[in-house]
Picture 1 (tube, rainbow, N blue to C red):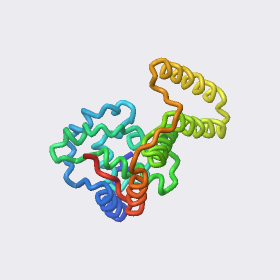
Picture 2 (tube, rainbow, N blue to C red; picture 1 turned 135 degrees about the horizontal axis):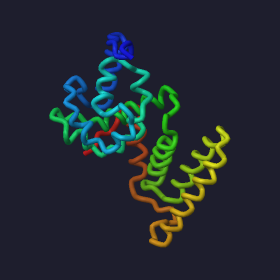
Picture 3 (tube, one colour; picture 1 turned 90 degrees about the vertical axis):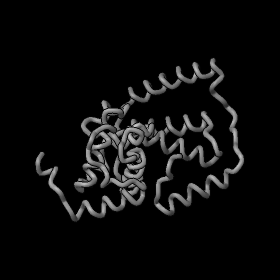
Picture 4 (spheres, rainbow, N blue to C red; picture 1 turned 135 degrees about the vertical axis):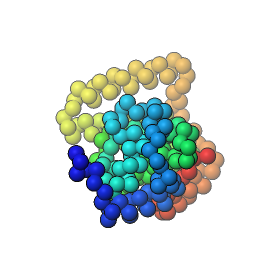
Length: 207
């Protein structure tokens, strides 16, 4: 375990620079006070990787661990970490940057369902300017089913169908499930912004 914590300058420098540039966050300002970790709502779901640990891994040049950990995929972008940070480091922007880097390097997500949710949500939003429930749910569930089929997890497929079917019925009763496709104005602008963000390899900052 000690060897994993050794500082690798040749790996660390370009990794730190790239993540700082793309996330807009000064990782070198982190002095490991762990206030972000104490307030992270998904901390119990991410093992030992809390926001402060992720920054530490980046600074030490632990590239493989940085691109492949539970925090990157389970972060809910609540920005509690940044609110608590005395140096205003928004780790949620860092996790989004690392997630993008992970996809660019074709690394299989630890939590595929989170990846499926994100990709289905974004594609639906870019296409229509808003998310239509039926299209989004179908896209999400098809991707989950394909992943389970590859691993012959038939029970998981039926379990997921039953769970989502029950959820759909409850949403119908509360009139929260819409079958029509609603559009918003300015869809072309949304598509241009999405393409521009991808071309520049930056993560849009939250306001």
